[in-house]
Amino acid sequence: MVEQPSADWAEHLPGKPATLSFLPLAQGGAGESGWCTYAQTLDDAPDVEILCGGKNSKLPSAAAIWRQGNLLHFGFQQDPSQLNAVGRDLLENCIVYIAGFHADRPLAAVRSVFRPGVRSETRAWLLSVMKDDQATAKSIADRFFSGTRQQQLAAMDTGAARAWLRAHMTWLVPQPDGRLDVCPDLEALQLDVRAATFLPDVATALHGEAGPQAAACRVLQRHCPEGPRGGAEPAAAGAWSAFLEANQDYLFFSENAGCIWVLDPLAKARGVPSARLRGPARRG
Amino acid sequence: MRRTSHPLFVAAATVSTLAAQDALHLAFVQADQAPAAARSAAFVSFLGRRFASVKQIAAADLNASTLEGIDVVLLDWSQGDGVMKWMNDAKAEITCPLGERAAWHVPTVLLGSAGLNLAVAWDVRGGSG
Image (tube, rainbow over all chains, first blue to last red; front, side, top):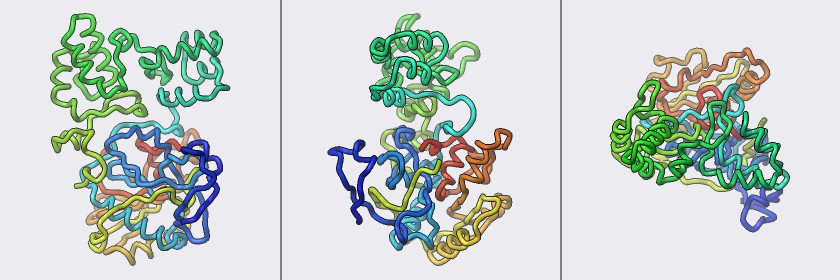
């Protein structure tokens, strides 16, 4: 291991250490840069397993070697002649490890920021931006909202806008244009689509009175795209209840896939709740 | 756009049972139009020493027949022939040397920026960093 200055990383780490210990993987120190992935875009998804980070120009939490389904990302750019003995052994280990994943697949569709087209904003990024004291009502409104909501927020003073955002944060979800807005059904039902309790809570609403029942069906139609489809109208409450009863243990939430609940087919095939089928347990 | 990964670690993870490597047959796929010969040679040489076999397959030749008996594919694909090309030319078709996401079944190691390119092409994770 070698000690190196923590530099820009210090502010992101507990205690703001001046130096950090690194394990060199290349001969002669740093070479050409490769690619790492922001951990917050990985959603703690069941098909994802972060094995290690790497020194990078972004965040210490960014993933350098990680797995999604049967794909293993080895983000270091060096070829074997540029890696040292540890680096070469690590590459070999990665190959052997991924060879054991025959049935797992990358789950969910997550649009890259580098791909043209609509990409959903996330509440996590909004919260991250709001941590910056310099972020104004207008900058936040222009970045995350559109239409009337954008205009309303941009016209507020920043303190009032931040207060409104905090009060409505639970119900902010991406709209068809990818920008955020309050979902009136979630607000009416007082449900947080991102919460671990969302599925049992919405299942309860399906058994309620007509108004909440219809709202629950609309919420599920929007946030559970692999569930029953009812054509122009959401599927009936009975169909949703049956779907949730059969699949609730095999659904996981993905903010980065568009604020939706996604079916984990490997977990369902094995009859193991998705929350418990993680990491090496998904081999085979 | 290059972000990581200088070859220095924060934390290493424990992986694998190394008894298996002798039985693994690999394919090294270079997706660049003008790949660096030395880089490809370094991978093929290394993999040939550590595993049962390694076959170098041109991206254009990748199909069910050439993948017969392959346990793991290693994909090498630079940003210049992927995301940078697509960003610089809005008319450039976004394609993937591995074909369609839904049809791909071979365990795969994405080397360097291949993970970024694949994320953009397939809408899988790895496209934000």
